[in-house]
Every structure is written in C-alpha cells, then in structure tokens.
Length: 92
Image 1: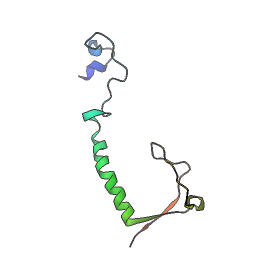
Image 2: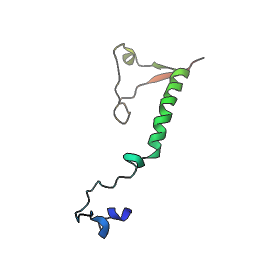
Image 3: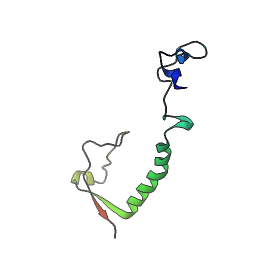
Image 4: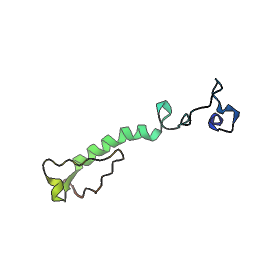
C-alpha cells in the first residue's frame, strides 16, 4: 500500500498514530525485496572479471603508475581521478 507513504493520505500515520519517518519507504534498497540487478551483478561480475584477467593483459602506460609500490585507490563509485591510462592486449 504505497499510499501509506504519501504525507497527504490518512494512512501516512503509523498504527500508533505517529508520523512515519521520512526514509521509511525505500524500495529496491535492502532486504528480500532489494533490486534484482544487485543479485544478478553479484553473480555475473566476478565471472566477467575472471574471464577478462584470463583473456587480456593490462599494462600501465604512465611510468608513475608502473612503480612497484603504486596502488591506485578507487572510491565507492569506482571512479579514479585522474584516470589511470592502460593498454589492453588480448592474450594469444
């Protein structure tokens, strides 16, 4: 009943008569009803990465990135600033 989360609807109040929290309705976020794409990605992405690592060689094109103790970090959203230039070559 999505009407429960419309502030103008009488069902907006909880069974105790209190107002619902602003973030009470979060479809596709957590629990058993979370986004189906999340489950699919958790199954497919590890396989995709493994296949890419087996079929391609990755090489840094920037000398600074090729240093032995250089480990670029990505954020939660997996973007890196500045970009990390790379050569990708198919393994024979």
